[in-house]
Image 1: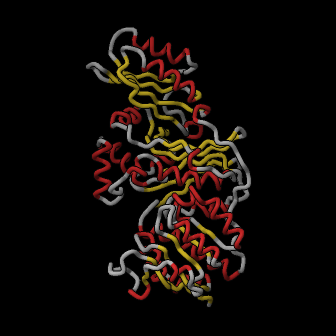
Image 2: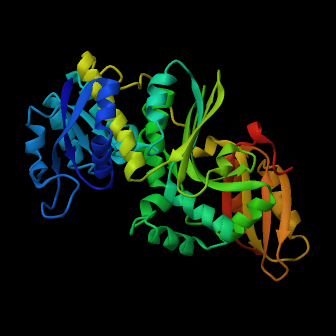
Amino acid sequence: MKQIGLGLLGLGTVGTGLCKLVMENKELIEKRMGISLELKKALVRDLNRERILSQGQLTTDPNEILKDPSIQIVVEVMGGVEPAKTYITEALKAGKAVVTANKELIAKEGHELLTLATEVGQDLYFEASVAGGIPIIRTLKESLIGNRITGIFGIINGTTNYILTKMSQEGSSLESALAAAQRKGYAEADPSSDVEGWDAAYKLAILASIAFGSRVEIDKVHVEGICKIEPEDLKYSQELGYTLKLLAIGKNSPEGIQVRVHPTLIPQQHPLATVSGVYNAVFLEDDSFGELMFYGRGAGELPTGSAVLSDVIACGRDLVLGKAGSLNCTCFEERPVLPMDDVQCKYYVRLVVDDRPGVLAKIADCFGSNGVSLAQVIQKGYEEPVDLVFVSHRVQEGQMKKALAQIEALPFVHKVANLIRVEGEEQFGTAAR
């Protein structure tokens, strides 16, 4: 039986979940893998706080983990870029395998850290950095390593999915749905990373880099959150046959890569349309198998702890077999990331306008003069101003923006209330005709 010592950098929700699983499944892991995982030390800020580990297993000194030869695997579950990056660097240089759940760190500094891991011949695994308990990283790196992934569509932020589900089902405002998410512990006191889309953007940068074999820097990801979504948009989208989700979208084409996070309308027949509450899902398109979807809990103590544990066991297996570092970095190309103005899709547009003769004709003329063809138009409301809702055919985003700039300048247009992209109709039917 190979004994492997674990050192944890952080002992919050995810670290506690990992410890629970190691303790509860110790015998099972030993029988299945022939390795014995030993929880040696955990780095914490407060030694006096009650923890799942004993007082003797806690420390405030990272060197007690990074310089301990009996610890072969370091698990980083602190979050943030620093000091996590420094600790991981030191651990790798000290000959230790590293497992992290840190999406921001991997999105921003993953290329450098993975390069270092390869140079020193050590593992750096990060399954838990995306979609909690869903094994999507290992699937892309191992199970689908011989496939050409052409599309990624992900609901990879449970907080915003819960908010949009509540708004859709109950007609709640964004503010009240967010407050409910905070009461249930689904949203942080400062929810900006979630509702502004950055949490999903970090995860998309990781997924796209692996799936497309080309490094995607976080500042190349187009990011829009859900802050502009109003109950009216949910209501109108349902009438039109759509469901509204915050999607992380990656597309790979001969021209380059698209990486974007934004509210998106998808047909109600689409598999992602049924993903509700805090659940996550990743939908993949490929030129050989067609479509695959992975679904499960995207956060939480045990789901994320389970993803960390799978990486720990993989590191242990590699240590036993002597093949560490074999799958660290799979970015072997340099593909351009396409600007948003070059993206083509359908659009939902909601305008607030005066209700008078000739308004629709002049707006339609602005669309037409910019090459925007309309698939559907509906008017809602009886008292001025009224909502005027359009769904376009496929068009370049740059053309749509030019049309809306002209429309917004018209004297009878109060505002362009929302612009939402439409995806998924090619595979799952046309909702708006």
